Amino acid sequence: MQTITVFRGDGIGPEITDAVLEILDAAGAKFNYEIFDVGEAVYQKTGEFIPQKGLDSFDKTKVLLKSPITTPIGKGFRSLNVTLRNKYDLWANIRPAKSNPCLDTLFKNIDIVTFRENTEDLYVGKEEVIDDNTVIAYKIITKKASRRIIKAAFEYAIAHDRKKVTCVHKANILKKTDGLFLSIFEAIAKDYPQIESNSLIVDNTCMQLVMHPQQFDVMVMPNLYGDIISDLTSGLIGGLGLLPSCNKGDTHAMYEAVHGSAPDIAGKGIANPTALLLSSCMMLEDLGQQKTSAAIRKAIDAVFTDKTCLTPDLGGHASTKQFVQSIIDHLKKDE
Ligand code: NAD
Figure 1: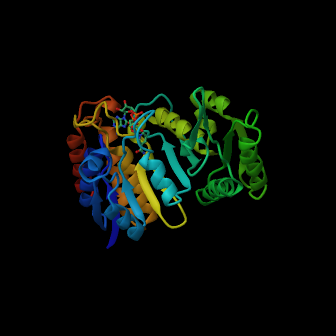
Figure 2: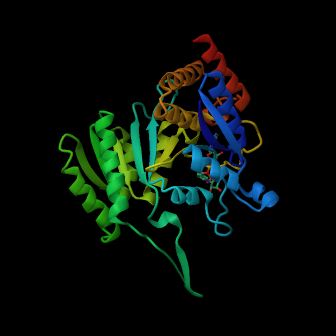
């Protein structure tokens, strides 16, 4: 049986982790778990934000199911998420936003997969104080990192029978950095004549996404735009509670919800665990447990169709526990 590492996160992290592990067990997922608490509360007790044993576990298992971790704003420690992505060179952040026909959302038929470069750009937070009046942030774009994420987006398009890849940039203003990203995109696109390719400036992209989102298929972009655009795509399909992701490198993979630790609802027992659950489905599929993943996806659809057990973010009144029980009931019905 495969062993995977689990970080329970903080805020709503522990609630949704426990929910997902319960569903994975009920669905018969063939995993052993090494489970660790991470984040500031752990630091206060142990002096470590991520326990060394947790990192040793991920070193060994190479697969991490990770719940959100709070990052202080404007002060304090560096994001543990950014730290993990860089430490393990998890260079591709893949975020599939697919509307669920069983839910009432503004748009139907959305099926957008965002490929977000995950190791450089402004998002790594390399900043310096120049003097009392001036601070600076480095936007670093390299050929190596751009090539591998853009190539991965096209390879994904081929493997998943997708039709189009769109590059998102601001190369009209950032001529050197985004200009490099765009020029690499245009060069690589020539190697994939069977896939339609186009590029859009990021501000126009935002408008197009909220007006005509069905035009998008696979999208590829530098780190910071990927962070913002993928939250936007989650809004198109019903909110952050629904958007899964996988952070992949050459050797390790980390599966996590796109959303954060949601401090506004933490501890209330009403968090929607679907995003982390769908991330675990991506993990199951990558690890050869397609049947288990399909059963969980079917149970999610059944609960969404039923509508009697939706969490408040989806317009319902159910608690996380009631939602989980409803998923498990549907899994058992289909056994
Ligand atoms: P957030 O994603 O935590 O929350 C935004 C809004 O969406 C909130 O109203 C929240 O209640 C709602 N929401 C998010 N997930 C939900 C869920 N599963 N069910 C129901 N509602 C949900 O964003 P934020 O408030 O800007 O960030 C909070 C903290 O999370 C910050 O410290 C941020 O740095 C951190 N963060 C961590 C990650 C990560 O660990 N990968 C990602 C994003 C943000």
